[in-house]
Amino acid sequence: MGSNAKIRNIKGTRDILPEEALKWRRMEQVIREKMKAFNYEELRFPTFEYTELFKKSTGEDTEIVQKEMYTFKDMGGRSLTLKPEGTPSVVRMYIQHGLRNRSKIQKYYYIERMFRQERPQKGRFREFRQFGAEVIGSMSPQIDAELIKLALDIFKELGIKGIRVNINSIGCPECKEEYIKALKEFLSPILNGLCEDCKKRFITNPLRILDCKKDRDKLNSAPNTIDYLCDDCKRHFSDLREYLDYLGIAYDVNPKLVRGLDYYTRTVFEFIHSELGAQDEVGGGGRYDGLIEFLGGENTPASGYAVGMDRMLLLMPEIDGDKGIDIYIVTLDKESDIAGWKLLSGLREEGFSCDKDYLERSIKAQFRESDRQNARWTIIIGQEERKRGVVKLKSMETGEQKEVLLNMKAIKEEISAKGS
Ligand code: HAM
Image (cartoon, rainbow, N blue to C red; front, side, top):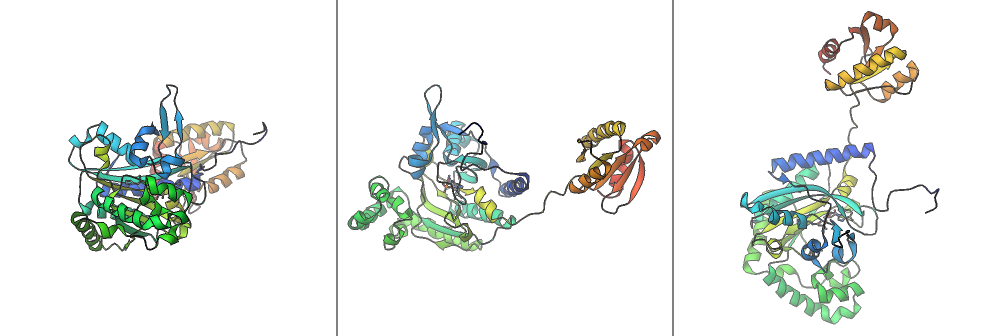
């Protein structure tokens, strides 16, 4: 970069300006309210972890670990990675802090930034935000249904319409093994015609071939996971469907849905929206009944999902802007300016949102600024007023103006009386 070139944000990261920050706040507020209603507690976790955590849990052969992680060595030579997803950290925390001892079932949520080195495009970034929900300790398909309902309630509250739910079951490790055998039998004769990635996946992780966008058409008649479920997994999946029906949730069974992370067992699901184009997955998740034990904890079932908030934002309708400020102070001369500045600080202590001019602007320009700031009241202070220990208080709604004593109590009373 030449020395005079302007420094810009890094490709795939996003600058959020105030108008958009408003939508983010609304999103976060609704997520927190719904999580409270469903009794999920918040977890916050570090931005980076030992690389090994993701290799072990997300999966050595997954796209994320193979191609997308931001991995670097620290000064002690340890390999660290910016978190590409939340589930491994949640499980690590669960084991490390003995959260099992708190209660047999734990329900958590998070709102966190994630990092993946993917090719940026609409709805796909290198730094992005996810909210996630994870339930640890229950095998019940009621939990899977509850998780789906929780996300749908959040979408609905934010005015996001048109989300479709796809579900599938990939079975427990035993039925998965049976299925993979059948899948490999199906793939062997057509393997030469598949893309290079799929040829590799055939050895390392054949399930992932079903996710391939390039070879999708060649896989239409591949065997379906649900035809290979054992009795317990079959019952689990039919119970899930019944619970979803019970909650009035419309869904499609997509027998090719496997998801791209290694830890899933039984239920998998995704939230889709057609308006997002190529990146049409708003969120996804499923059960990971084996992960906790695999990472050194006790054998504990778990289920969860994450939703891409940047994608949610694209689907959210416009919302009303901030309602503006309570009071803008207009001052007519230098000394009044100081009096106004002092008053400002007192008003803020009282909880009013207020501001004044700092550019020595003309009275007319100060009034214009009061309008621009959408102030409900303007306080005017000039030499005349100061002499008499008063200020002018103008309602910007009615245009009505009156004199009030220059003290906090009087101003507060006047403003409160008008119902502001
Ligand atoms: P995931 O499917 O990798 O699952 O990501 C979840 C969501 O994050 C996606 O559906 C998408 O909306 C969003 N997302 C992923 N990559 C990007 C990106 N580059 N830019 C913008 N948004 C993106 C997981 O992360 C699992 N941890 C979900 C889970 C939780 N499973 C069980 N518990």
